[in-house]
Image (cartoon, rainbow, N blue to C red):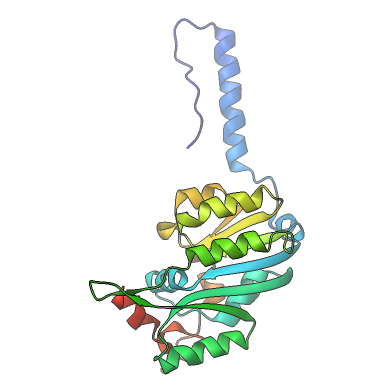
Length: 226
């Protein structure tokens, strides 16, 4: 929201109006100009750690109508910087062989998978909340990374992200804007809308999806159960 000073008060002198107009123009210029270029942002990222909320990303992909290519995703999120580790957090159904195959593929292709068994709720739905695990890892690894890339829109992560930033780390949030809490965006140094990078991370349409796509791992069934 732009700052627009009141310049209509009849009790103020002409010189006051001129000063107010100057302040208004300054704020408009500030909003239109980026302090750093994209290249400068990448140069300042240092060592990167990536924290992916698997369920949140899956639902965002559904909204965008795309399949995620996890090789492309890792390349895009790293952006040429040094990667410390890429964490992928997800609820699992141990009896789902396709999902187990997908998670094995992830482990062998650059991701550290943190899995948590789905818990059946009284209404029959199943859920696994990994906010605590993401927050703990964010805090525990402070000092080992320079930039934390959080792929989630969950506002419950805002406090941990803010705490990490006060300890010297940069925070980047990557998520779908319509699913992202303002509280999380407000503590980020950089926000990227998934809709703006979907061409870089989507999987080419195929009749039979490989492990790179969520549809082959039982994630849709898990989502429906929630």
